[in-house]
Length: 188
Image (tube, one colour):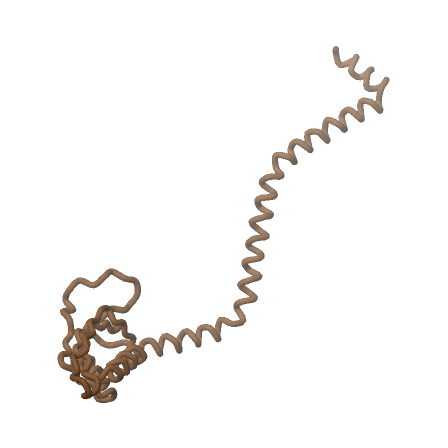
């Protein structure tokens, strides 16, 4: 087929030739669009997700100032309830104050060696451990434990041992003796 025969064919069948060319163009556009659709859909999904994230950020941004103030107050409260590991006298005074308030007798209160390597943890806190031995009635020792638990400093009882003295008949209850390992939360 040469160029003259092609011109004659186009002149003889103009509608069919135009329709054929139009079908060829549309088929190539459809194929091109099909391969490009996955990328376009992915870009649209990413844009939609980013838009939802920004919308949520705008909705929550109205409360940021209040939340910041609340967190600053909570941080101030926490800082006020931390012990300073180097203030041994003040830390021991806390236990003596609890002794006076509850009526128990502190037999022995001493810090446990703090030079031992501490557990690697996150944040700015450390633990200060004390060995506490006390005597008193059962009710008073429980009151001491409650005051220790809800006291001025954050406290955790790591271990303990409790014994009750033998009583003679008719003489009332005996004293309770308790040995505790207490951990106070402190600044690093």
